[in-house]
Length: 532
Image (cartoon, rainbow, N blue to C red; front, side):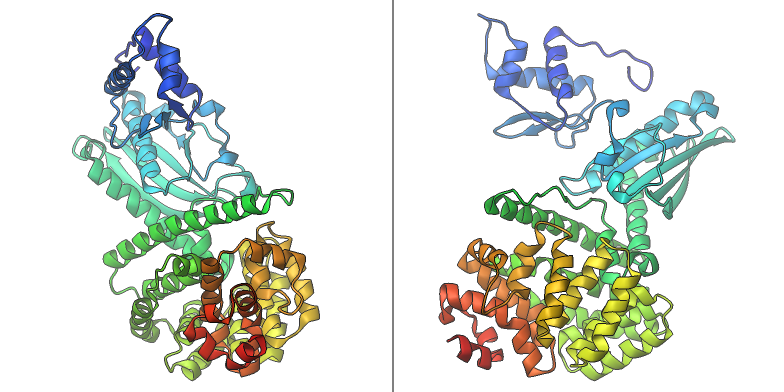
């Protein structure tokens, strides 16, 4: 039945194809599978028949092959049903984003179809705005549950309708699913004059983008509840990290999982970049967006540096120029906002372009006036460690770990900084304890962190396994990454050497000293002499 009450009728072949596709949503139905479903013994089994049937189905479903709502083509493989199963069969715990509930429908009378069309169109547009691999489900009768994030989608879009003066008024609210905190809201009247919002895909897409951009910014900037700005920007995405890896999986399988996470994060990073650029275009004078943009460029190297360097992508000079311009133009306007000021200070220090003393002064001033203590303790701890004040850094990071929720992204972030500080200071006993906590978070954690934080002279079994999984290109890119985001930033030579010793030893022992890039070898002559 269509929105205007017309009945759609299918032929036997169409019905069989539709049943096969819809019975297994998001799974590819090969041409051979469709042929078996559609044809009988002795009949024509030409694959051209499949194309004709699919084309007829798309026409009857008002589907577009280039922007499919129901049937998507997988070239060289077959077709896949992307419309999802019936709403009542869907489990919101498996979704990244929930569209629903729809409130107020029962009081709309004859205007109800217009409201339902708006909600379905919004769902369709939202699906098109999220990266591949993220799931969005449509549940008009959904009941929000106050529960842990792991038991539900990260966010939901609640839509409330009411009739006024012959028009459908719609209030759309993006909320955090676990707490119900509102991230963004918008109101629109779907009267006869504005009904083109539904008829014009470009207008509806722009409406959805504004809503999602505003929700992203609200969460990305909520450092009081979601941790330091770099963490809150990371957790503002719509997808949940996969924690399903198990210790019994092979090294190859764990490595493949890590690669999948890298690819998903790259997609998410690119989408966040688009959001920031669109937000800045809408508010060019907003200094906080400039700091967020600089933090976003920095996060590219923190999260993706190894992969980028391994793929031969090195935009450091260009990105550093952009970060410097953004930060210098924003600083006069954000010094009264401690969360933004301390983030700007951390990034200025990272640039290593002569702003070191200024950065420390700004960071300490911001910390003294901040009310978001738990969020800023990891940042001030890291800044103090970089300048050689290990004894002032460790109490900060320990206090942060006591205040942050165990297992949260902010807690993981603080644990990583603690390990970084302990490695640089040569505190092996404290490091072993911190690593145990860090590795308890995920089976994949040792693959990434053990080559950085392991014992360079007596690698652990985890360290040896992680090293075995690395090709020469991967090992060298990991070394360059460790130097860029950590080693070079320590002011004291001993701390720099300690921070780089483990990844440098891995490359020298497996591939020889000649594999070490010149920029790294020149910065650590004492470690190179020891390993040579």
